[in-house]
Image 1 (spheres, rainbow over the protein chains, first blue to last red):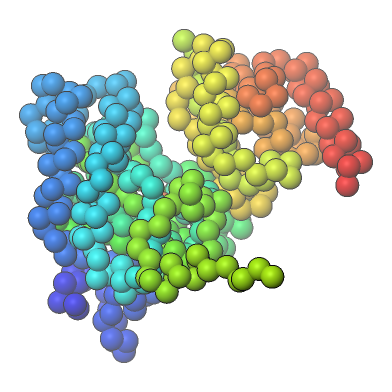
Image 2 (tube, each protein chain N blue to C red; image 1 turned 120 degrees about the horizontal axis):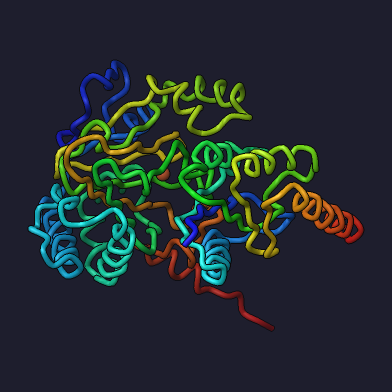
Length: 269
Length: 129
Ligand SMILES: [Fe+2]
């Protein structure tokens, strides 16, 4: 499966370790792959376009142009409506998983929990209302036993994308955090600005990242809109954060012996 | 309608854990009754003693009329430290509300009332232990 990996070459220089997904994730903190199933990613895109069209009558079907049809004032209402509608579709999670099945299998395992609802983000040019400033998901209730699968529905680059701190800058980050403990997260971001990597992806590519690494986005200063999805996967039996199985996650795949085990009760005398 | 920003916690709030969904529901309901226009909440880092996200809200406070927090007990128990944080808001002629306790700080005197409440509650918690 190595042939499917398409790593940004300038960030990747593994001399000794074999280039497995696991080693790349350990070294860089993220990986970018080509979708394992192009049909699924097209299916997801069409579902989103169809759903937006129901909410925004004049929408021309080009996601890059969304800002031409939706005002920032109405953006969140439309986003919530699209989010609720696409998550009612029972096929969505299966399609989502099928774009990165093999990678997840290697990185996480084959007994999985999945986020109950797949998130959708709209980042319109110049919109400052839906920003996610510098954070790690583990600092707000997720466990470190989770991986994020992030799928852009359009080509993303520079500020139209998101940034992440690569693994090799993490200890520098911890030192800076200590020094700036009484400052704001924005000041922390500014101090480390040059250490973050902006992730460029074409539609059809998928970002998989370690959510313990600080990441975020800024105002989209490009000319077109970004629509992206994100969803977390974790080992079904690994520790949960405050986002637990039932309220945030649900079982996605389970092997038969685990089913037997979870249903087994010792006989009562 | 007054535009407000929400502020919720991912740490325990006075020994209790409240899911973010619940914190947002309490804030949303409070804003509805107060006729505030609620912009989504910022979540404080779970790192112990972190107020980096709150500080960021202060940097951007000009964009809103005030901040609605889930609870007064998201803030440090030390009156002095807390006063400093709230004073920064008053100075900018903005307000900070606490949805769970249904209290609001607009003026200096409000800070004193909040301190009284916090101290009584804190003592009460200590006695329970
Ligand atoms: Fe995140």
